[in-house]
Image (cartoon, rainbow, N blue to C red; front, side, top):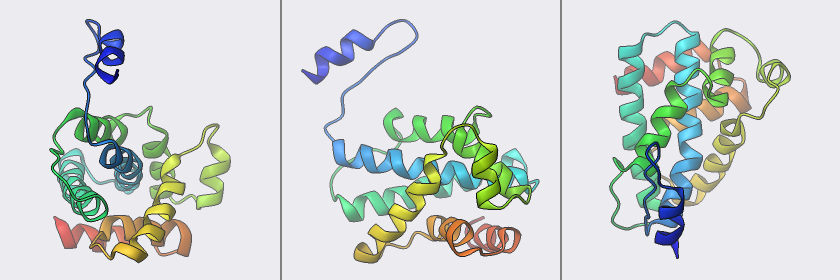
Length: 169
Protein backbone atom coordinates (compact mmCIF):
# COMPACT_ATOMS: atom_id res chain seq x y z
CA UNK A 1 0.00 0.00 0.00
CA UNK A 2 2.87 2.39 0.76
CA UNK A 3 4.20 1.94 -2.77
CA UNK A 4 0.75 2.74 -4.19
CA UNK A 5 0.52 5.93 -2.14
CA UNK A 6 4.05 6.93 -3.17
CA UNK A 7 3.11 6.48 -6.83
CA UNK A 8 0.06 8.73 -6.34
CA UNK A 9 2.26 11.55 -5.02
CA UNK A 10 5.00 11.13 -7.61
CA UNK A 11 4.96 13.60 -10.47
CA UNK A 12 7.50 15.55 -12.50
CA UNK A 13 8.32 17.73 -9.45
CA UNK A 14 8.22 15.11 -6.69
CA UNK A 15 9.62 11.60 -6.48
CA UNK A 16 8.09 9.84 -3.51
CA UNK A 17 9.78 6.70 -2.25
CA UNK A 18 9.12 4.10 0.41
CA UNK A 19 11.32 3.37 3.39
CA UNK A 20 10.96 0.44 5.78
CA UNK A 21 12.62 2.57 8.50
CA UNK A 22 9.48 4.21 9.86
CA UNK A 23 10.74 4.76 13.41
CA UNK A 24 14.18 5.95 12.32
CA UNK A 25 12.68 8.34 9.77
CA UNK A 26 10.25 9.72 12.36
CA UNK A 27 13.06 10.34 14.82
CA UNK A 28 15.23 11.94 12.13
CA UNK A 29 12.36 14.28 11.23
CA UNK A 30 12.22 15.42 14.85
CA UNK A 31 15.98 15.90 15.07
CA UNK A 32 16.36 17.86 11.84
CA UNK A 33 14.37 20.65 13.44
CA UNK A 34 16.98 20.90 16.21
CA UNK A 35 19.84 21.16 13.73
CA UNK A 36 17.90 23.78 11.75
CA UNK A 37 17.57 25.82 14.96
CA UNK A 38 21.33 25.61 15.35
CA UNK A 39 21.90 26.67 11.74
CA UNK A 40 19.68 29.68 12.37
CA UNK A 41 21.50 30.53 15.58
CA UNK A 42 24.86 30.37 13.80
CA UNK A 43 23.48 32.52 10.98
CA UNK A 44 22.18 35.05 13.50
CA UNK A 45 25.58 35.12 15.17
CA UNK A 46 27.17 35.95 11.81
CA UNK A 47 28.77 32.60 10.91
CA UNK A 48 29.03 31.99 7.16
CA UNK A 49 27.68 29.36 4.79
CA UNK A 50 30.86 27.26 4.77
CA UNK A 51 30.83 26.98 8.54
CA UNK A 52 27.12 26.14 8.59
CA UNK A 53 27.70 23.40 6.00
CA UNK A 54 30.34 21.83 8.26
CA UNK A 55 27.96 22.18 11.21
CA UNK A 56 25.17 20.40 9.29
CA UNK A 57 27.57 17.58 8.32
CA UNK A 58 28.31 17.08 12.01
CA UNK A 59 24.60 17.24 12.77
CA UNK A 60 24.06 14.36 10.34
CA UNK A 61 26.66 12.30 12.21
CA UNK A 62 25.04 13.13 15.54
CA UNK A 63 21.60 12.26 14.18
CA UNK A 64 22.89 8.93 12.89
CA UNK A 65 24.44 8.07 16.28
CA UNK A 66 21.25 8.89 18.14
CA UNK A 67 18.85 7.20 15.72
CA UNK A 68 21.01 4.06 15.66
CA UNK A 69 21.19 4.01 19.45
CA UNK A 70 17.42 4.37 19.87
CA UNK A 71 16.39 2.18 16.91
CA UNK A 72 19.30 -0.07 15.88
CA UNK A 73 19.12 -1.15 12.27
CA UNK A 74 20.33 -0.64 8.76
CA UNK A 75 19.69 2.79 7.30
CA UNK A 76 21.36 5.20 4.93
CA UNK A 77 21.16 8.75 6.21
CA UNK A 78 21.92 10.22 2.80
CA UNK A 79 18.44 9.18 1.62
CA UNK A 80 16.16 12.17 1.03
CA UNK A 81 13.88 11.25 3.92
CA UNK A 82 16.79 12.01 6.24
CA UNK A 83 19.30 14.29 4.55
CA UNK A 84 17.00 16.07 2.10
CA UNK A 85 14.56 17.07 4.82
CA UNK A 86 17.39 18.24 7.07
CA UNK A 87 18.99 20.35 4.34
CA UNK A 88 15.86 22.19 3.33
CA UNK A 89 14.91 22.85 6.95
CA UNK A 90 18.39 24.06 7.87
CA UNK A 91 19.01 26.24 4.79
CA UNK A 92 15.66 27.66 3.77
CA UNK A 93 14.87 31.19 4.84
CA UNK A 94 11.25 30.04 4.94
CA UNK A 95 12.06 27.43 7.62
CA UNK A 96 10.33 28.18 10.91
CA UNK A 97 13.12 26.50 12.85
CA UNK A 98 15.93 28.34 11.09
CA UNK A 99 14.02 31.60 11.53
CA UNK A 100 13.50 30.95 15.24
CA UNK A 101 17.18 30.09 15.66
CA UNK A 102 18.19 33.22 13.75
CA UNK A 103 16.18 35.31 16.21
CA UNK A 104 17.95 33.61 19.12
CA UNK A 105 21.32 34.24 17.43
CA UNK A 106 20.42 37.92 17.07
CA UNK A 107 19.91 38.13 20.83
CA UNK A 108 16.17 37.66 21.30
CA UNK A 109 15.10 35.61 24.27
CA UNK A 110 13.32 32.34 23.65
CA UNK A 111 10.03 33.84 24.81
CA UNK A 112 10.31 36.96 22.66
CA UNK A 113 11.27 34.88 19.60
CA UNK A 114 8.20 32.70 20.16
CA UNK A 115 5.97 35.78 20.39
CA UNK A 116 7.50 37.26 17.22
CA UNK A 117 6.68 34.17 15.18
CA UNK A 118 3.21 33.62 13.80
CA UNK A 119 3.91 29.88 13.54
CA UNK A 120 5.39 27.19 15.78
CA UNK A 121 9.04 26.23 15.54
CA UNK A 122 8.85 22.50 16.29
CA UNK A 123 12.55 22.37 17.12
CA UNK A 124 11.88 24.20 20.39
CA UNK A 125 9.78 21.27 21.60
CA UNK A 126 11.84 18.64 19.78
CA UNK A 127 15.04 19.50 21.62
CA UNK A 128 13.34 19.00 24.97
CA UNK A 129 11.92 15.67 23.82
CA UNK A 130 15.32 14.45 22.60
CA UNK A 131 16.96 15.65 25.82
CA UNK A 132 14.46 13.63 27.86
CA UNK A 133 14.82 10.56 25.63
CA UNK A 134 18.57 10.73 25.88
CA UNK A 135 18.41 10.35 29.65
CA UNK A 136 17.53 6.73 28.91
CA UNK A 137 19.89 6.13 25.98
CA UNK A 138 22.96 8.18 26.94
CA UNK A 139 24.07 9.00 23.42
CA UNK A 140 26.79 11.57 22.80
CA UNK A 141 24.72 14.36 21.21
CA UNK A 142 26.52 17.61 22.04
CA UNK A 143 24.75 19.74 19.43
CA UNK A 144 21.31 18.82 20.69
CA UNK A 145 22.36 19.20 24.32
CA UNK A 146 23.90 22.60 23.63
CA UNK A 147 20.74 23.89 21.98
CA UNK A 148 18.68 22.46 24.84
CA UNK A 149 20.87 24.36 27.30
CA UNK A 150 20.41 27.61 25.40
CA UNK A 151 16.63 27.32 25.02
CA UNK A 152 15.67 25.74 28.33
CA UNK A 153 18.45 26.57 30.77
CA UNK A 154 19.29 30.09 29.62
CA UNK A 155 22.90 29.30 28.72
CA UNK A 156 24.81 32.03 26.89
CA UNK A 157 24.12 31.71 23.17
CA UNK A 158 27.42 33.00 21.82
CA UNK A 159 29.74 31.12 24.15
CA UNK A 160 27.79 27.85 23.91
CA UNK A 161 27.67 27.90 20.12
CA UNK A 162 31.37 28.81 20.01
CA UNK A 163 32.12 25.86 22.31
CA UNK A 164 30.21 23.41 20.11
CA UNK A 165 31.93 24.89 17.03
CA UNK A 166 35.33 24.23 18.55
CA UNK A 167 34.22 20.70 19.49
CA UNK A 168 33.28 19.81 15.93
CA UNK A 169 34.70 22.12 13.35
